[in-house]
Length: 172
Image (spheres, rainbow, N blue to C red):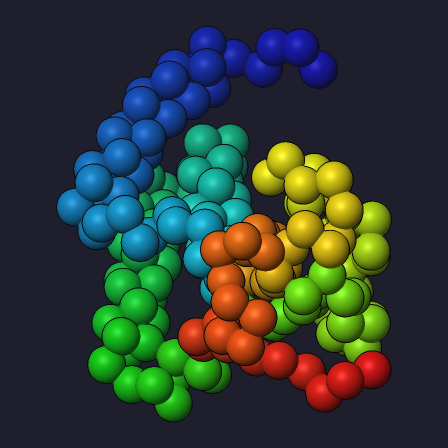
């Protein structure tokens, strides 16, 4: 239970070091986008990379080169999706969500809150995080594509000015 063999421990040390080095090298060469906090697809890739690394470390039936190939495959797929997203608006819309307006000119957009499964308390917490005490002090709160809430203080946006690229749901 606590100790199987010295060979097993040596394998973890050697394979772990090599797999880690391969992962770091791949992430450095594939660019910042591979582990960016941008959308659900990025999260899946990040979790899968960790799972592959753990499997290579702890499963004797998975060879180091198989694990490295799996890591390269995921990074390559991530690169391909990012490349296509930049070049094709249709593909980008397929793999990414769009920002959604949750609060406008101090008024909560209840239909959008329900659709995005965000509570008023979540929005109020985001407001407090930006130093705003009340909803009326915000021109807008937007649920971004990666799940964060962006707050635009009221003094920064004229009342009639729309937020570019933000989907505004029908009035609730």
